[in-house]
Image 1 (cartoon, rainbow, N blue to C red):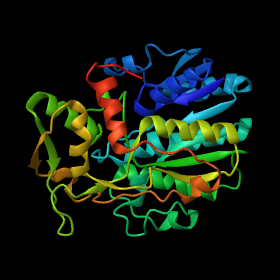
Image 2 (cartoon, rainbow, N blue to C red):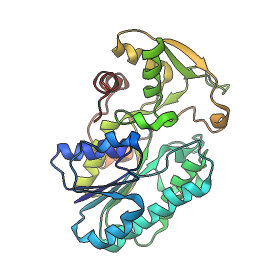
Image 3 (cartoon, rainbow, N blue to C red):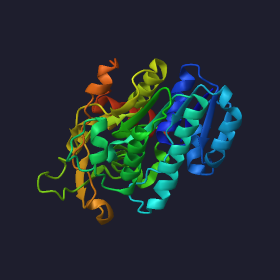
Length: 320
């Protein structure tokens, strides 16, 4: 039995679908399942049980002897949420409880950290444990993720195998429900289909021209392949970056959207004031650490990822 938390969300639902493809159908999906707009993410998945987020830890106490693995992807990911208490409850303290349960019951753990922990990148993007306490995230979400990473590294008692994955800019199917927090690729696709234009944030940083902000975009299908690899190997615990290792500009999205059969016109809009001061202008994962433990698969190019996402999911309205 494999536990996937955040299973009604974006990466969690794709993870559950990918496990199904490999014949893992004895899944327990954990989340807040009350939102109608997230139900399509798990409706067609094969699983043994749905367990509410607040009921999960008592459920685990009763059923841990049947569990083989916990993939903890559930979190509050809203980067514009300012209430620190929300993140302390859902991202920090809840994750501590999951970690402690894995120690107590002898279970391996993979959990979602975030590239938001790197802040503006003043310390670089190296997944070095020694840098964690120095990082300065730009928002409470990133801070909560870094706080948990730091706490995990300080624990004397750890799961016999554990991995924290610093996800960079993940995009792909099953993010319909994310609203403002969906990827720029999702929003660009929606706007192009309606108006023939692509809206991009104007640069408010003197070192970056409009459209030349850079991100390490990773396709969600690649992200779950890495999780599968770690799940199978169960070696080399620690924090790992999960990006492609290659930053791309927002202008690159224009070329990639040829998949829709037309070249979109670019319309620049001001970055919203409430996120402008904590906006990341450059992210690029250092991937040597993951490669060094044997992960050899190539990552999907931005062009191929957008082509697959748009043609096979967004246009037909399909889920993974």
